[in-house]
Length: 370
Image (cartoon, rainbow, N blue to C red; front, side):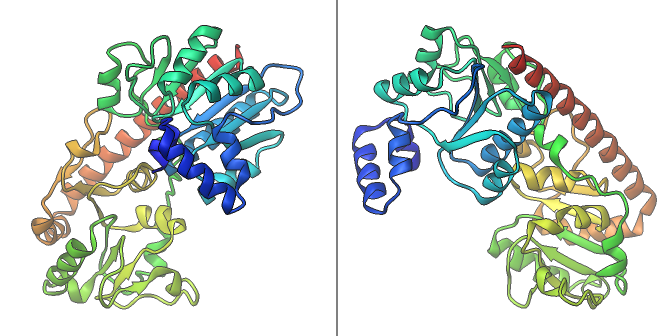
């Protein structure tokens, strides 16, 4: 429903408007109509516009923070189509920033928002550059860019900052080289402190980041039936029968017993796990989790490497879920090969992190020049 509302479909918009006003959320209803109040400012503002996806909301907040660091006085407004707590927490920490729900892509709403905000530059995250907005910006001569999204038919005249190989291909040379902004945001923890805390009594730690509950249950059963099931610790990205919550372990910090199956139930543990696990296996994780796992510089495998849509040739082993326990046993039996794989991944991560930093600098320079 949210996508159809912000795409400007009339019936969906009427239903959402009535629902929001009855529930007391008149601010969201008014924002969809373009009735936003701009912050008082002498200079023309920067408008950073996110769609409904959480990853794009977070990225919008980080871009706003980077622009604020470069230009302390420039007015900035961030709009979004859905409230995500991590995004809101970051936005509230940025000084002199306005943020609110954004407008639906209807002609009248677009006209109102552009008249009220009078932006000097627009940064659109994901699928936020919709047809009426693109037409309004073109008519007003407002420069714009799309970050973490494909150009689409409405992106004529926009600069692209793609994050993935497929996005870069879609831009067909009209954009910067693909640079994963989340590589720049990932916490690259170096010391494997978690291994000495949670895994002090275990031979090895393994982490499957994002398997479905059914696949995770099958993996846990296969792992428990293997020799590793009595010597190692298995971390899973979803709950499964008999799994302990990692946040519960955090209350007393006692080492986990070998053979434990642990549900990684909070994001704050990702950097420590990434730096401490012997190997990590990816299914199709969202960008924050993907780059958190790659930042650890450990051995990382994936069920379908091409499906991760990474820029460049990522040195990941492609391992089917049914073969994962066997692959882990091979890594333990071949520590030299495991070190080579981990070193290659570490170089890849820092290469992409540098590329992301360069792209972020180019984006901020372009925004602040307007």
